[in-house]
Each structure stands twice: as structure tokens, then as C-alpha cells.
Length: 152
Image (cartoon, rainbow, N blue to C red; front, side, top):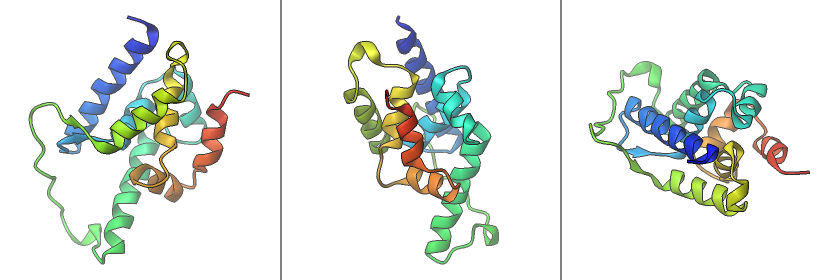
């Protein structure tokens, strides 16, 4: 396997792990972002870490987004113990946001040029959804981060 294929396999496995930890039946873009942030030593990981988004930082941003979304409909997470959703013991299915992120990341470059930043770019190109809201709440300029991934 190529280095990218090894990397992709590793983040997909970690993304599945993140989805199971969330008791989610689907692997979504935010699970892939957690996986990228956890996979140290890659350009994508370094870029995220430079803006305070190591795995813990991403998790905190996602938790803030969840609380913010609940507050928007008048529910306070602090007032309730929310049970986890009933996730499946089998591997989570690939969710719509992850499919779109991968499609955006893979179609933007030639196959021979795929690297760790390709998947991250696909995630960051989302205009709406959990990841853009979480990054905005964390004070991360998604467009500026994305521009750092673009070749000069």
C-alpha cells in the first residue's frame, strides 16, 4: 500500500472508533476530524495543532457545538444527563457528511497527490454542518486554515 493508503486506512479505523465512542451508528466528518487530530506526525495534524486543535481541542470544540445546538432549542446540557444514542456494536456506516468530505477532498487533487491534508481539506470545505459550527465557536477561521492547505 502507498503511504496515503496506509494513512487513510488508519484514519478511517480511528474515525470508526470515534463514532463508536459517541455511540453513533454513522461515521461523520467530525469523527474523521477527531481521527486526523489524533494521528500525530502528519502535515494535517501539525496544521490543526498549530491552531490549538489537537484531538482534545477538537473534542472540546465539538462538545461546545453540541451544547450550543441544544441551547438554541432551549435545552441545557448541564440540566440533564443525556443518555448516549443507541449505537450499533457493528462498524458504523459512512455518514453523509463524511462521504461529502471525502468526495470534496479526493476530487480536488490528482490521485498521485493525495496526502493527509486532502481529507482535512475536504472536511474544511463544508459550508454548513457540525464541523464549521464547532470551528467557529472555537474561534478558528476555517477559510484561513483551508488557505494554508492550498499549494502556493
